[in-house]
Length: 123
Image (cartoon, rainbow, N blue to C red):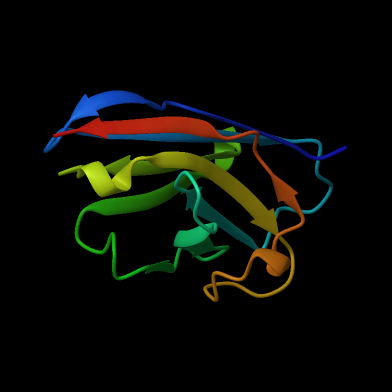
């Protein structure tokens, strides 16, 4: 059973930074694509960043230049470094793993999801 456990959320002031982590376990074949999504209160889930098996990353315009996705294959871990956080970044953040295509930010491409970690940014 594939499991994703994400962590690292918290409350910060505008301009602050957080680093989210996601540990993946239980898989036979490494995920082809890992990604971070978020869902603000009352809004739809939004794809933020994705990274494929060779380390190529894609970012949504809303986070480009502020967020950095990375992975440590030896630790089966995925990270999201978030800098210059803004109040509009407040949301529940989810990591996701997929074995189909990558970089399209389509929820349907990801089979497994973390439980979510809350990020709150105050002004």
